[in-house]
Image (tube, rainbow, N blue to C red; front, top):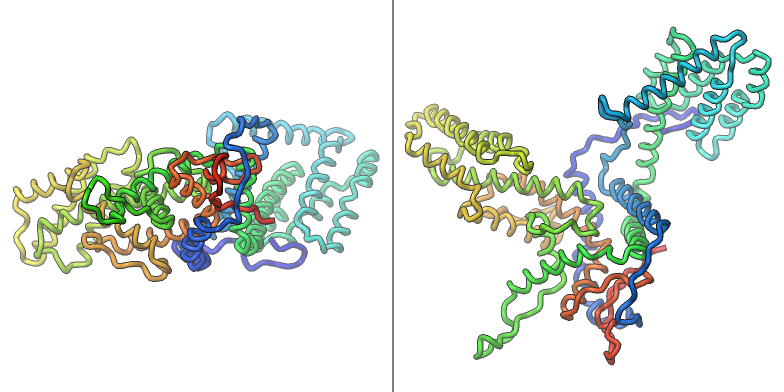
Length: 543
């Protein structure tokens, strides 16, 4: 928020779409990610620069309360910085307590008691100014916090007019001009506030009420100005955070690892399951006459991580969320729910167009209506209380009505009752896990996600949409671009940790937790009898 006599054009964040934010993020990191995946793979498996000499096992580390609190602060700072970096629409909003909640009632009672006490003090003869002086001192502190370090003239003026020692002397002699002080405060707020608050300042100047109600309104507007100040500060620091985002987030996560030995357990389990899935799909590396002795190739790190992120979006990872994705938990859940909804809509539309055929093909307006109708009726299907079967029955009824309307408008006969009954049954059957249409759509959806994660610059040039998903192509591309942006940034920050875990798993040993110094150890480094040590991709905290 501009201070002194400078006026901003606006303090509101531009209401840009999430896709633009994700595309911008992908533009910054996609070119680095594709190269870093493979370079990190080569270096971590062939380099000798990261050897460790730690013992094969370490006694359990005792964590103090101070260390726990430090980790909590680091995680909180990490989440806040990450949100500022990746979400251009991030803003701090005033907190609103729930209606009729105990906290809200307590707050109202305490505030009312304070203002009643102030009013009682000022109505005494002579007036008691003790609470009023405290309010003026608090207001002075807030106004000074809005100033830039170089705003000496305004700072001096505030300190002179709101000279607390002088005001206390005046209060002792019943010579305080409270109304004059309030007028000065309002005028100063008018110089500091953003244009969006001009109307609030005007109301303060025209406030016909008593001095107590005026002070209440002054504090309300100061709270709004503080929100403006915080949000403008966020806009100012965002470019600087983005420049050093990877180093900053990795350093903060490294701090958490130093105090939390198990901070990669869920991540290890997630990568282990993905490695096993990728290994099963690998072709034999050598041809052999004995099928039992065929040797399979090992999947590369890029394939393992792409498999891991595909499983994550598709909801195949049922364990707790990997620690390295905690900062994106909200976004990831929204994308998973969006993917689930799109697959259900695609399954319904595929059944409809396969059953009706030529009579409704080539009608984009009809397809859009059917898609929108189905999406609305299935919205919220991820909720445990959602009745999916009932929603699909309602969707099938609405779809049949819309189809009959379209057919009769183009001189086609309406759908016969047996066909409508069959169509409704097929639509409702997608709730079954072994439903062939559902399995087909899920497979092609997964194929699309795998390709968009593997192709460089896929955020700028999304891959072709697989057959059967054409009717949801715009929504699928939007989801893909958003997911790629999140994944690419995550890989930039945490790929050294992922590489170390993959190495540990490929050596056939359980992944080790972080050593006392916070680095992730290679399993070879824990073998005391080994003549040589395999290097690990040790993430070094950037200073």
